Length: 252
Image 1: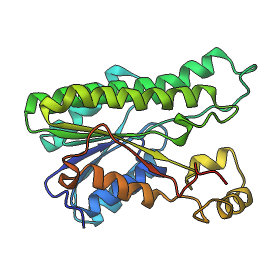
Image 2: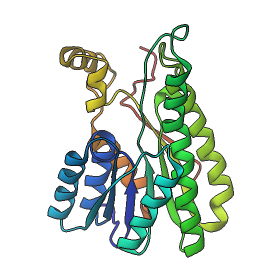
Image 3: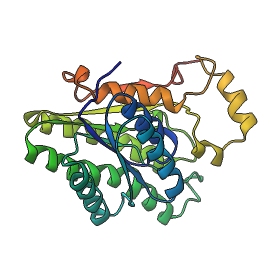
Image 4: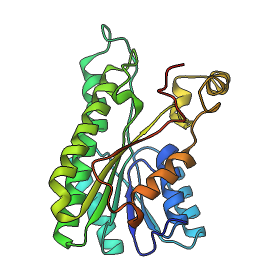
């Protein structure tokens, strides 16, 4: 088992979906968790109770990661409670899917504010804390195969995901001197509550069967990969992109 004993992880958007999977897996491996949510406080508390049931500590913090002041307050709450933040998982995102010729500018801006600027705000605030503390740290960006596959009706989301990949590689270049690892995970089609906004249960079930691995990804699949990249076992990995997609991107 990967060992995160003594570590504190802040995971954005961890009340549900991939963030929830990361929170539970990291707690299973010994980390205390700062659970961020924006619109699902009850589900955030449910994750916190699961973490506590695993023998770890957890707090929930409501914050819109597109709001710089809210991000700074969120990180400070984590530091006030646990004394440190060792791991940041940039998971929170949103997707407004409309045709390019029809999508309003406001929808594009909101998507990029959350998916790209949110990663910038959280990463910079957390990295400043890590650099000042002088004990290194791990920053992980949950991107998507949308970063390189130009799915139709997702121009804002695709653009943001491509941007945060390169943002992460640039951060990795600059943060090596502080021994802060920065890496990216690209999930493929993953079974999350958000997917229900765009597909029926039958479409998800049948679509999963057509993938190379024969099923959709799970939040546990992503959580395990994230936990490894945020552990000491991955100390020599930085500026890397790990595709966790069951072969979704492969020609078929």
